[in-house]
Image (cartoon, rainbow, N blue to C red; front, side, top):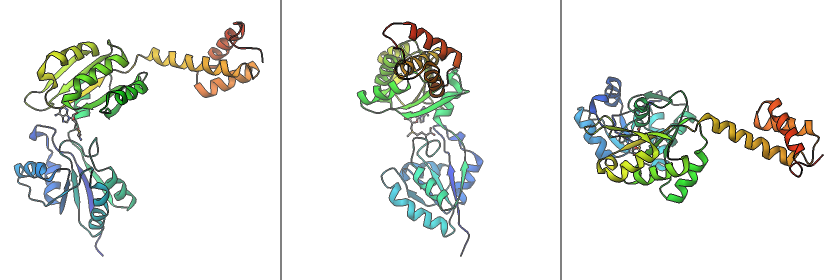
Length: 289
Ligand code: SAM
């Protein structure tokens, strides 16, 4: 029996063909098969590099069914590359099921890194990059989108969203409504392409621009939003301490209520203790245990 092949996860350009790496090209040339999201689109890309490796479609609608076939071919000794339409596969693109199955089957899975729109946008946004959260696409329907944003309103990490051009205006409106109009943000559009533009401002300014500047809502865009100010963290923690103490003080001795609230919230004990004393002093707020 031949040794199993390797599954290569290969990043391709997000616009500028010059961003493909030498390793990506040689890997795509040397593997026996390239699994691609859209074989026509990828066929054109590969033709520009003179790569003639056979292509097989792997997209969100057939991934579950195709995985077994691809794993069998890998186990039979074939090496396979996975690419998506643009950028890094699996980042808001198909491939997760295949990589999980290959890992579980003991097949070697190797990255050939390269372009990724989220990272490219973050690198020019000028917003904190020490901690960030990639949120991918927001829900398409407005109510669901606002509900998702509500869960992120107190997130202190920089947030990175992908957005379709025709929804960019609505998404910016919702971001301003939920996060507040003064939150700083960046819209990075058509990165690495002819019309690459990076718009900076607060959410209200960016929303107003999207409503009046037809160019801004053309092409592909990443929205990077500053995290909530750290004070929000403190406010949220204080609100949680209060809620817990109000529930616990009527039924537990003060020190036990304080211990529990400290354990649950992680807030310093002396702050929780002082707050518990204040609440005990407020008639009707926290009855004597
Ligand atoms: N896997 C890709 C990656 O690594 O970036 C992302 C694929 S996702 C289906 C497509 C989304 O990525 C677009 O809707 C847009 O939000 C973003 N995107 C892709 N190319 C872009 C570009 N050149 N400039 C700005 N955003 C881009």
